[in-house]
Image 1 (spheres, protein in one colour):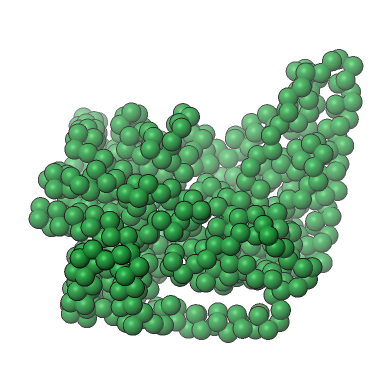
Image 2: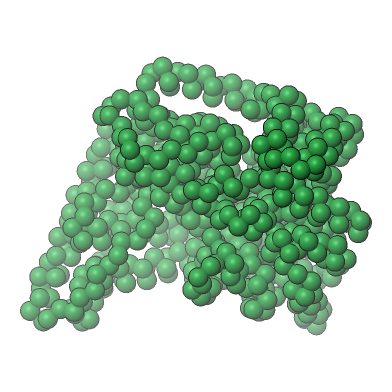
Amino acid sequence: MGIRSSIKKSLKATSPQEGEEYILEGIAVAPGIAEGKVLIHFQEEESIPFRDLSEEELDAEVARFETALLATRKELTGLQDRLSESTSPGDAGIFDAHLLVLEDPTLIDEVIKGIRKEKHNAEFVFQGVSHRFIKSLSAIDDPYLRERSVDLEDVARRVVRHLLGKSGQRLAGHDRNHIIVADELTPSDTATLNRENVAGFITEKGSKTSHTAIMARSLGIPAIVGLEGICHQLENGSSILMDGYSGKIFLNPTHETLARYQKIAEEKEHIEEGLETLRESDSSTLDGRHITLAANIELPEELDDVAACGADGIGLYRTEFLYFNRITPPDEEEQYAIYRQVAERVAPHSVIIRTLDIGGDKPTECLDLGHEQNPFLGCRAIRFCLNNPEIFKTQLRAILRAGVHGNLKIMFPMISGHEELLHAKALLAESIVELRERGVPHDPAIELGIMIEVPSAALTADILAREVKFFSVGTNDLLQYLMAVDRGNERISHLHDPSNPAVVRILKTIIDAAHAAGIWVGVCGELAGDIEYTPMLLGLGIDELSASAALVPRVKKAIRSLDLTACQELVRLALLGGPAAEIYARTTGLARSRYPDLF
Ligand code: PEP
Ligand code: MG
């Protein structure tokens, strides 16, 4: 299911016939087969008009608001009835919570009072009040109340659409056995989804390395991206089958298609069961080279998966997910408790905690990132942390303290040069002094590494290697910056190509520099979990691979099926200057010959 084998099709020219099976194809980014009902999730906020009202208009405006509430109520009960006919009655229960939101007297009173006092139009006042409610609910550290904020957000969008005179064609974003079809899902959207409730994702935008795709793989949910226009082609409630291996989507699948996929799903399950037997086995090549195989996590909830997949610890903990869906950043105590829990669960294996990597496609409400023309090239990740030392040091102190309870390592993201690294190290040293002065137990000798994901860091890897204990290559960003290709843009995703000779050369530069300085080097970008490229990475001399837990067993099988000699030979040929297609053919050719059942 490599990028090359996926075909993106624009949906503009054709449309499905009522009730007939219809096949679409996008970019497969997370494996698995799912069947369910379409649930359209509109990402974009409605644009809200703003009007001053005269005293005489106020009664009519309040009445307009009340009519919109009634219309939303009718819409929701209609959806509830339809759902209870077509699925289990429990599924329809989701709308009870939504209906309660519509009857919330505090919310309604505040809006009516606001219309009368501010003398503004209903949608403008309602938007302000509901946003305030959503923010305070989502900031409360209680999963039940946080869920209610999602309900409120959903209901609020419906009310606004009614006020704007648009038909409310939305369904709740959190229902069982549904396949979410969206223009785009932000990482924070994805982080709030419960994997029990969502069978699959399909989006118009995105690519294999966009954070939605990464999250889908972590959650074990099949995902297909790059289907431009699909939100407007599909209807809520239509039957759909998706194949997250090939990128195929079947609208109104026939009995034959369903039966065929039932068989495929059983075969895949059988292969997965076979992989489970490798859990305790060593990730070494046929000729005895051990590769450390670790898992990437975004949320502590994934720790069970890490334990189950047979990984040697955590190679990348994306801590920025702690900062999503809240209005104040987590303080030292909160972070300490979470890192400690992770350290204790994973010990004696190590956990590489990557410090806050915010910005780019990972904005958050709780930190003011400011508006930037080019956020991916802007004040993100370590740059934001160096500009905001108190936020950075709060996190560093929490990690240093949690280090006493397990085997933690710190990793800085997006380092672009030597001075920047020295600056970050100085703040780490200050954090150690602060803890010492406070008399708080901590690990002052915690190992430090950096991500190599900016070409300037790759080209000065020999200099940077003197300052740290390890490198981990963030291929998602490294390829983005190396080839000037937005990693989340489906229109140019073919350029985010690991077999570009520039990628092979830059990886070789990094790995050789690390080894010359006597430090180890891993890959924690999505390439680490792409078994088509395992031969290339092994041939380049990589020491560690860290991938989503769901992919770890496949990578282990790949490592165990390869021998270093063959991998090194393919890299030797790749470095001679052949085109990308040739490099791809060699690495995937070796992969397919050694573990054909995984494709
Ligand atoms: C990367 O860039 O490869 C990486 C692992 O970091 P992220 O995907 O979180 O940017
Ligand atoms: Mg990155």
